[in-house]
Every structure is written in C-alpha cells, then in structure tokens.
Length: 76
Image 1 (cartoon, one colour):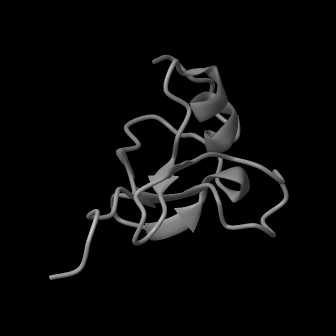
Image 2 (cartoon, rainbow, N blue to C red; image 1 turned 30 degrees about the vertical axis):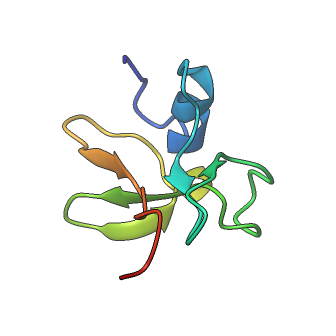
C-alpha cells in the first residue's frame, strides 16, 4: 500500500481492508487504532530497527518495514 512521507502509520492501517494492527493476548481478537493519541495502545506494531511502537505516534518513511503484533491463541 502506498503511503506519504510524514503520514501517521495508524492512518495507513485504517485505509487497509483488514485494519487490525495487533491481536489481543490470549484471545487473539483483532485490535485496531482507537484513540489516535497514544493512550490506548491498541495500535501497537513492530517496526524493523525500532521495535514495538504505537502506530499513531509514528510517521511513515521510505523503506519502513512494519509487522502486525499477532499473538498466539493460547499459552502452552
């Protein structure tokens, strides 16, 4: 998906067909950006070379590699 430099990463997710940024633990329910101001932590994603961040607090830049935080459905 195309994004513009300086756009919030959460805004890009909200344009996707599947808007979830992470799944909850341990129920694996999909979660998505909610408050858009960094309070709720629903928009956590993993960004290569940065780590886990709130996507509503991170702007997009060229070459950015982002992964959803999908947790396993159950503990073993």
